[in-house]
Image (cartoon, rainbow, N blue to C red; front, side, top):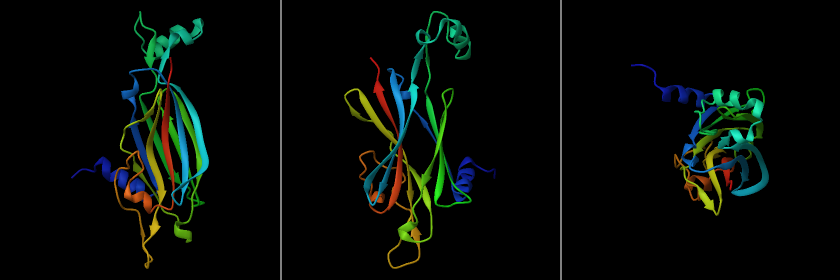
Length: 204
């Protein structure tokens, strides 16, 4: 039997490497300014420490490009004659790897084809105060939390295992998918986690 993709992902996760890809093409019905955000939670409370960076517009127009560069953009993005817009953001990939030399940190890279890549480092906390770092991911159920012309969409949770009371075992078990309303049972147990998501503001 041939090796399957899931086998490869399982091996990578055993090496503390996590890879996730998200299709955001459903939001191409309108033009949005898109931003990545990362919120940190400790003991079930948001710490106030947040990373964020701008991805730009999900739909771009040649009207925003200097005249001398328009033809180059038309060729690069295969924009038909008579049209001036192209779909700029259709998917987002998130890559997280725990530091091999310093297990109290992890590196995150967030990439978007044709847009670019952003990266920074996470600070990790020892599980239940012990000298042990074990972090895992869970995707969120994909639907937007909408307020007026703004949407906030959590994509991925990266959180610490916890010690089973009265034992030396550590666990990270529960729902395989987190609800955006943050009511999942697993969140009651995870002592420290980050939530990575996107925020969309509709352009008029």
